[in-house]
Picture 1 (cartoon, rainbow, N blue to C red):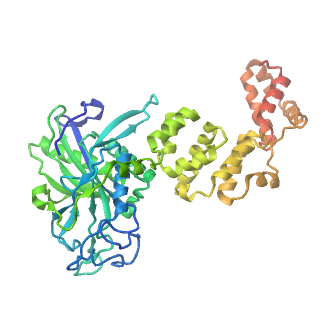
Picture 2 (cartoon, helix red, strand yellow; picture 1 turned 30 degrees about the vertical axis):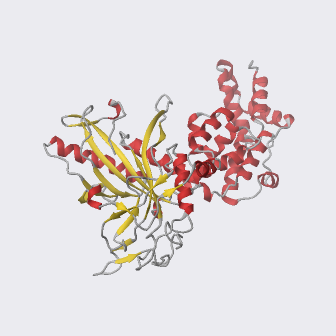
Picture 3 (tube, rainbow, N blue to C red; picture 1 turned 120 degrees about the vertical axis):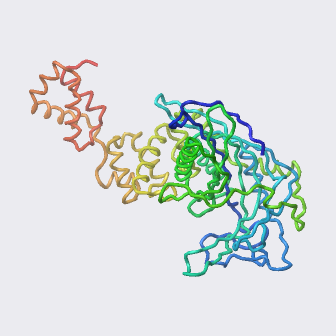
Length: 500
């Protein structure tokens, strides 16, 4: 790939060193496991968590005479992903053999794509922010290519004192390698890129994005340079399986390289590993180039060819993607860019929100989903798929507020009950006597009692009318928060002679 610098150096992203400022350059190669029931070239299952070596066909184990047969669904998934990345779909692509030798690679080569990938150049727009002024910065990150390849097996070195074991369950599983251009200039940009890419493939249903299971992992290429100079020598940090670790690895590696260069040394192109326990990278091996792998077209596989109709049929069935959904939330529901960004960050969150917002005020629904629901899930360490509060339950709470059956304060208490105990919100309100008091006679009685019991406060209100809020609070307290707040405020002002 030809390296092209498309970014103008930005001082706010510079890293200060002992001898001046530096700029970090980041590119990523993300391996995303294709969502498919079977592997790329065999009918073996891809189910996660099965016993070692139980998802292995004769093809995966490279038994003599076994020939690969392409899985059409994996091809479709790659094309869908390319369309989601607004990328060029290549109607003719080739599979190549990438030759290297490792115990968990039974064939002695990996079937991949080299010069002719299935997907060409595309782009992802990431958004950083908000800043102190509440503004977001959109940055376009180029996609160089997406190609299909088969995964290797897994070597396990901790199962026996003197031997290593090999599990071939993963061998032959379809991967999409999504290669970015070297367009990122900070660890924050890299984390935003990985977050956005994971969101896109999850929306598309082409990869589950479960980094903790290894179905999405990144090789992170890092180099540093003086601002305005050419690209420096890069080091590749292999198989980083957490967005947080990606940020930490880049921060450490950039500092490591800056330290070497400022002391007069040079950077060796190499492959490194990130140790999350120590928060540092360490050398793994010298970095291979393409010629080291002796790529050549796989003689067992014909060129992959399809027409415009094949692509169009996949394109028309694409779901609404995060950027389009965010724009719609802002345009049609009046949400802020920040709220819309939070809600579209995960497809499951967006789906939940839309179920709550259906037929209701979008801003109100967004506030409850973001502040109350997601806040509660964060406190309890759960994600949206594990929520104990269904969209119907949260929608019912919002409906009770709108109907005047409960106040906003009571609604907060009701939400906590539903969160911890479950149940129908309307039935809970009825059974526990949580309806707000709208009887002005009862409210007036409470106001009169509070005023009569606090003559000193009445005098203070005459000098400072804003002190009337104290009486409102006392009345709400006396009524257990059930009094209608608007009615209380109106009566307090009337009784104390405060003009609107």
